[in-house]
Length: 313
Image 1 (tube, rainbow, N blue to C red):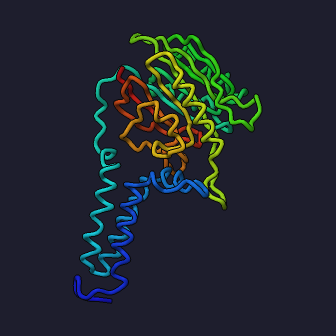
Image 2: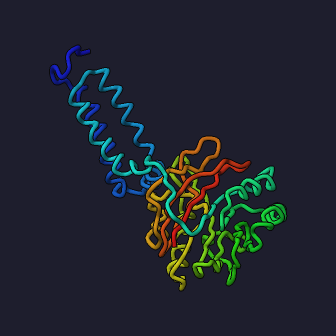
Image 3: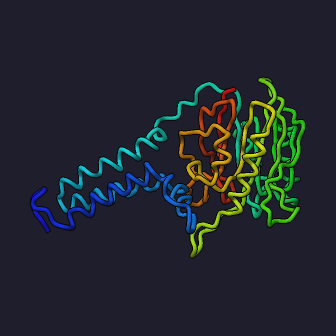
């Protein structure tokens, strides 16, 4: 092993700089990574922030090798990561807002739906969206939330609770072609807020699976296309989308939705899995409004962590 910094040029000295350049390229140009076979592009984008962990690992290798070129090369991935996610590390000053909303997949095997509902009450949100609301648990959620949220609608396994009147509530068909009519995971309602009517969508897109052939997301992608079309046809200018979209904001699989909405570009707010959150797949998107703050609230007995957001109209 060399004992002087930068002495000589050996083949192993290009390993760290090459890896650093690769990480930087993947961060900046993740969109060109092909999605076939196995939806590799979507898989990369789902966990894109964690690619930054390569920087300290490569830094350690560069220090061990005492290689100046390797240290200089690390500027590339570090800069790329900070450009993409550095803003997420800034303090959350919670600026002026008009609405507070909460999105939570409560888990269809939640052992304590009443306790979960009480935890959500503590957020003092104006709107609460829930997914995986099973028929036996609906009464528990409704009874606990009713004192503060007298208006609610449930379609299939998704529900919306509101401080404000809800009108024109209806299902939104985001069902993949190979699933039966009992699969209902989308709703739309008009929330009559003091600032005017807002179309609120609640959606739970199909899960993705990681297997030997890669990421299986065909159903999720098909459902996202249907949801994007529904939002695109929405006549009200102001729209809020709350849901477990089984995808992060960087995943191209959500493009049919994100292309039509304003996506928060701050705050990690990792929501899944609750035991060790590594990704935010529970989302709050808006149209003709602004999300001014985004954060997670204390975990419930679900396998997801609730996500809260403040919205300025």
